Length: 71
Image (tube, rainbow, N blue to C red):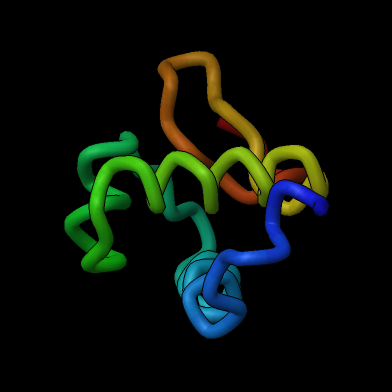
């Protein structure tokens, strides 16, 4: 089973949608968890999957940003 098989695809789409709609969005894990309305474990798993897929990346100041954006 892949790491993201049991993640809510709607949550993943929402996360990506927010980054596409708000260029320059940079969130800490705690900010992301609150914005997306999910628990810490779910938030971390979503982030890990999206980073592994090269959709998001970590900035030099430990914030989540869209892959390809400067931080």
